[in-house]
Amino acid sequence: MLIGEYKHTIDAKKRLSLPSKFRKELGKNIVITKGLDTCLFIYSPKNFQRFLTRLKELSVGKSASRRFNRFVLGGAIDTQIDSLGRILVPDFLKDFAELKNTIVLIGVNDRVEIWDEKNWIEYRAQSEKEADMLAEQLGEIGAL
Image 1: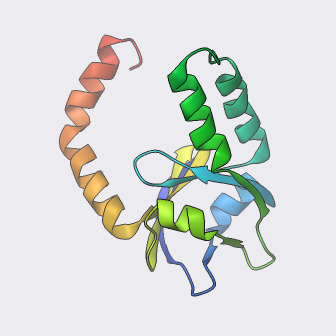
Image 2: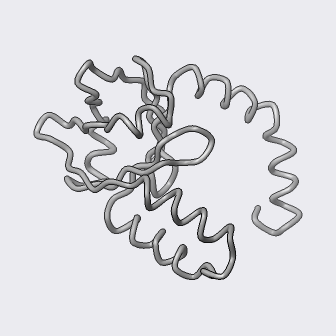
C-alpha cells in the first residue's frame, strides 16, 4: 500500500527522486501518466494493468469513455527508476502537472501522485475544509 506525503525537488534534467518506501512498493519499472486535478499518477505495471482492465470495461460507444481513455493512455509512458532512485519526467507531463522546482509525492493506495507544491497546498487546504461533507456524501452511497 502506498501512503504518505514527501517533498522533493525536480532537478534541471527533469529528474526526481522517489522515496525508498515508494520504490520498494512500485518496483523498478513504472508507468507515469496524466492524473486528475493537475497531478501525475505513477503506477507499478501490475496496478496499471488493473486500472486498464477497468478502462476496457467502459463503452467505446460513449464519448466520455473514449475521451478519458485517450487522456490517460495517450499521456502514459513506461519508464524505469534508475540506480539512484530517480525518474525522468518528460516535458509534456511536467508541463501538464505544472511542475516547477519543489514537488510533493503523495501515496494514494495503489498509485503515487506527483504534485507541484503550490498546487498541492491549495488542493489539500480545500480538501481539508470539505472532508466532513465528502465523508457524508460517500456514506450516503455506502462507500464509508
